[in-house]
Picture 1 (cartoon, rainbow, N blue to C red):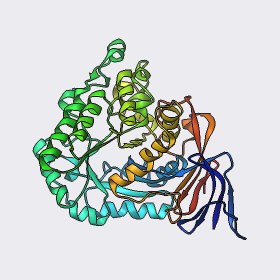
Picture 2: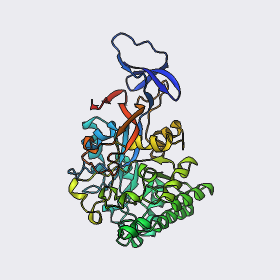
Picture 3: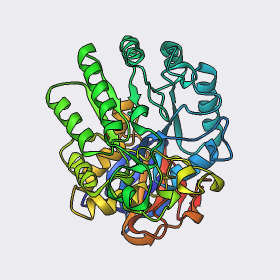
Picture 4: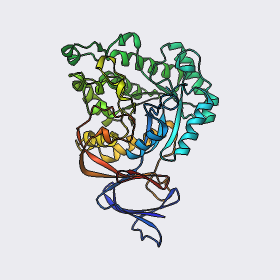
Length: 420
């Protein structure tokens, strides 16, 4: 048995007894003889986080990240579970790769890994993958993330097919003809710095398409990593109309703007791009009013040589180890939302959307627990990341909320800066 002593749980000081993979008691607990006692005085207990959008890169791109290094980053960031995208090599478009990812994650034995399979074979946007077989093998959702499903008829057929299996499609909303070789957000920063811009419409046109299709087919769709004021407005209006659309955003869309790319920093290159202040503020409002259902990392690690000059740099930010601190600092500490709301956005909601279990700090609940020090301010140091990807635009940023311990199904996997 493990007894966590003196943790703050949404304003109440409690002890948490864990027996096996379940919470045995919450309240005033006397540790039995032989129990492992964790001193949590001054720390806050939360259900460990669930990230429904990460890139673990394995198989095929292990030089960027692999399942082991990604899971080490996950538990260091307070995540008990992650859902990994299929843009691997080969693409996760068949049951054998789904099973490989699951088996490899079980061998690593850190965070739980739930594969997301491709919508189309090879992510080529043509032939629909075999959703039934993929779901039976363990895929929790389907996405061609990294690329959009460009053809509207293909997406329509995919949504109809997914409906038969009650499967979730996650759409990477990007109209490539509108991207047109753009590098960063189209606006003042791009003009001043001399970079070709990417219009907001490239995201919003595709988001509108998915909403219209979901409405026409009376089915559900999830919009990945929204970044613009227009996308938030479209999704808000769709929800009010009763359309079954959900969406996510990432910390970099409410904790940063395209000004980070003004000096050509390749670490600030991400897809969709960092937007302007009005978009950042709109994303915060969308989080506040429930338009945004989940906060994800879109953890996209790259090797150092892939983040050269901005024009040629790969898109992506290594986000698992900074997500909570950035979210707490820019949403809770700023007064935009409560800690309880943040917990829902980072744990309960993503778990519900993809249909996976999450921790509950209540008697009988799954013992996926994270302890954080909300009062500790620290500087983001990518060189200390457990992830192979050190690519973050937040190097040197001072934030609050350091993860101190992560428990996965009753076992301590990370504590005081060390993988257990």
